[in-house]
Amino acid sequence: MTGMLVPAVLFSLAAVACSTAPVAAADYMDDGTGRVADACGSPAVLGFIRSNFDDKADGYLKTNMAIAEIRGMHQNRVELRDETHLVQREYCRATATTTDGKRRPLWYLIERGWGFAGIGPNIEFCLSGLDPWYVYGAQCASLR
Image (tube, rainbow, N blue to C red; front, side, top):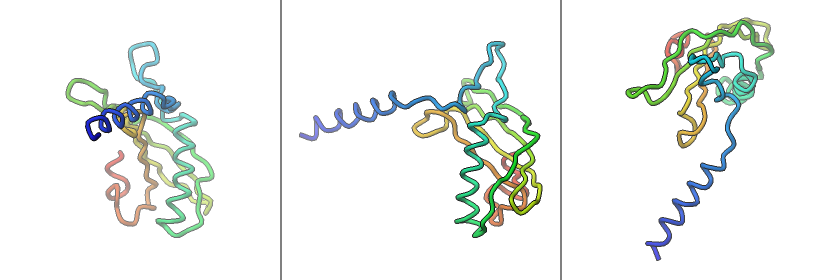
């Protein structure tokens, strides 16, 4: 019985992974010129940051704060995927205005091929001054 259960579970997981719809934020690998297109201003990426900040501000910072606006998005650097680096990383910077009226530097990282089960992107972000436990280092240093 166990001999049949393992292949059935593996097949089911493979079917789920293959049926997963591609994420719009991941569609930036190549813009047709052989170089990486900038995904820092992608509406999907910025929407992800806004919605996840709302959750983190409420549960982590214990404030009723949200991101009102994100401006000046640009790419700091890109680490391309190759034989020794299996994950492509795009480091971005922007300025976020929060609902308390303050403008803060927003640092974020888009990792292609590092999402759930290696499918799609992973996005990490940090607002300078709003990381009291220094999860991303002083002033979000690890995302710069």
